Length: 251
Image 1 (cartoon, rainbow, N blue to C red):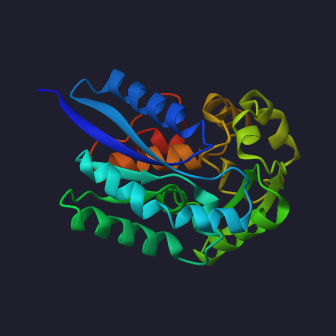
Image 2: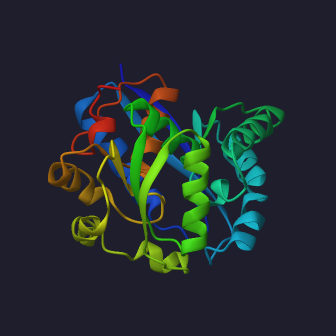
């Protein structure tokens, strides 16, 4: 008998990619797992420019989003703005997830909460990678905060490419078909895996499997990692076709 899961999405107001890539992967999941189906429910936090001050203000609004989504009695909530979490300092994803979960409990609609920041760390660890190279859309100072956060989690970052796009709408308009050429500039010597998009807003899904085949290394993104953690949280098989090694079902 098919079971439906309600997936709550806590989304920056200018994000246009989370609500396309994450549902696309879970809809692909439904093609190989006829016993599960998913619906998607969003609440938005104001954010237009990807700068530290605006990200911090946006993050403070995430509690309201968690409460609103708990009204819908979601089975899991996913907070997807990786850099908003990582620019708050080492380990902040755990404090954020705990705080937002408490907000759902207080509202009588308890739901587990995951974050794309925590999911990316978990995804890298799940495939056993100790060293990674990454691509981000951020300005270089924010990329350095992401690098620091990943390294403070015990993972070495060998190289990082910053595409330096400050406007979040423009990030969502980046062409994922350019990523196979972009990664040619990435130093992957000694890397165990490549993070093709350390940002849930930067489109990457069409390129994940192509770049993994091109490099011969596991390729993951903030979005594929978020789907991985959603499936693990719901105790579901982690197979999603053509979405890279992390979603091969092996982990």
